[in-house]
Image 1: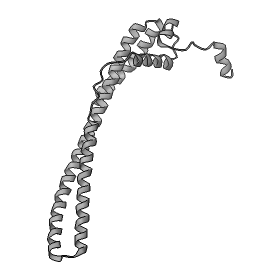
Image 2 (image 1 turned 135 degrees about the vertical axis):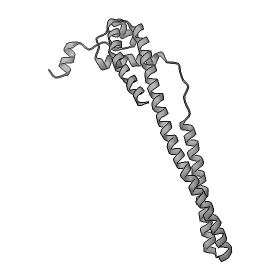
Image 3 (image 1 turned 90 degrees about the horizontal axis):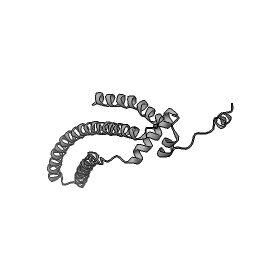
Image 4 (image 1 turned 135 degrees about the horizontal axis):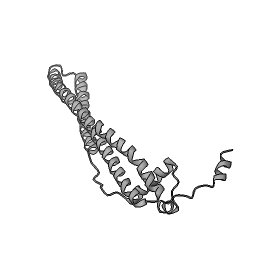
Length: 176
C-alpha cells in the first residue's frame, strides 16, 4: 500500500507543473481534465490511507476481542467460584463483592458492544464518486497561487482569481 501511495504522490508532483503550464498558456479546459486526474489520485490515496487505518483498527479490535473473551471466561469462572463461596459463607460482605463483580462484568459487555458499534461506523465507506466543478476550480486556484503563475485574463476570470497587484504597489508594500 505504501508503495502505491508513494507512486501516486510522485505522479501528482509531476503533473502539477504540467497543469501550471496549461493554465499559463490559457488552456483551462485541458487543465481541468488534468486536475480531475489529480483529484482521482488524491481520492485513491485517501481510500488507501482509510483502508490502511481500517486494517490497523481491525487488528486492534481482534486483539481486544481475544483479550475480552479470555477475560470473560476468567470472570465467568470467578463468578461461579464466588457463587459457591456465597452459598458457603452467607455473609453480606461476600454478596456485595459478587454484586460489584457482576456490575463490572456487565460494564465490560457494554464496552465491547460500544467498541463493535464504533468499529462498524469506522468501516462505513462514503461512495460519493462525482467530482464537483467547484473542487476542480479550487484545486486549480491553489496551483496558480502556490506556483505564483502569471496567467491570462480569461483564465483569471474563469477561475475567479483576483487581478494581480501592480508591481509598484507590491514593492511599496514590501518596504523596498
